[in-house]
Image (cartoon, rainbow, N blue to C red):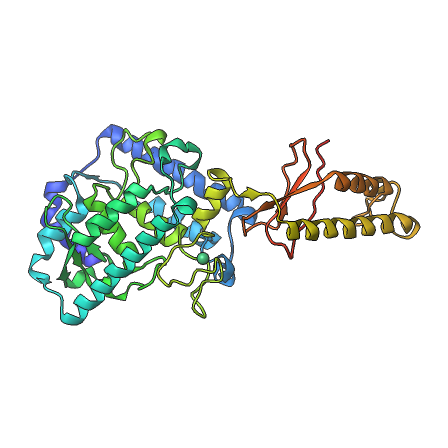
Length: 402
Ligand SMILES: [Zn+2]
Ligand SMILES: [Zn+2]
């Protein structure tokens, strides 16, 4: 990386880099100051937002946990940074690779060709699976959901375009030695030939859908053929336009990070959703969850007769427990819990138990097919309805809204 940067500087920098104007310098310094304030603020809220040892929390591996040490390093490095203007014309990635690498290009070996074709097949299976699960994972009109503009919402039209372009692609090997840590693959978006140039790191990428996968690399590169860029460069990008300006990175991220299964493939299936196909996306992924929550809440149904019986039995048991607590009020309940704040346990008053009984008797039940939930209510609704997803674990939660 360093050597490549140095080479680029020597060969090309007179053409592309120049000092900032006074206005640009001020804008860059202001951006640095804002960034430093954000970083310092995250340090001052470290107990709420940062994690000392992210590696001790494998259950949160899909979240970008940040340690205070990392924030301090970022601050320290950002304070040292100087700025230059980069006048590079269109697509940095393209020119960069094209001007420097061409003598390292060669056809793929037979083994590499097979591996690349396999990666293409896996990617096509992932894309087709996303289309099959479009009701759970895709959004036809992302622009209608500004509340989700931080999420890479993907339409089925985009998935179909990715499939169409990926089928046309041919592969070329780029063995540029200095590429090892930087570029995985690249394309010339404006060429009519749909060639993906595969660099040495490509072969070490994950074969299956996950962060850093060959599948994500293909989705990224094919997105370039559809006109997407690596970053939002146009200053006119408004929040409303953000969805239209998905980037190559956020499109790949949508699949690698947001639609992928939450657990490893084991025993011929993914236990997060029961899917048995290895190359598949997940209805219960983070994308599935957020869409169910916000855009596609039509996952609520009446109970079947069997489910209704189970729910009613659970209500009866709960009522018996509550009545029994009232019977044993001398031993277990406290008339005025607020007078005993020194006791750090949850004290319950008979009045509260009576309220629970009264509300639970009014409750009706609905089924919520969302597997991430045990049970929930809409507290502001005037009808008292409990939603549960799993018949073995249904919770009856009374409604307090009245
Ligand atoms: Zn790119
Ligand atoms: Zn799954």
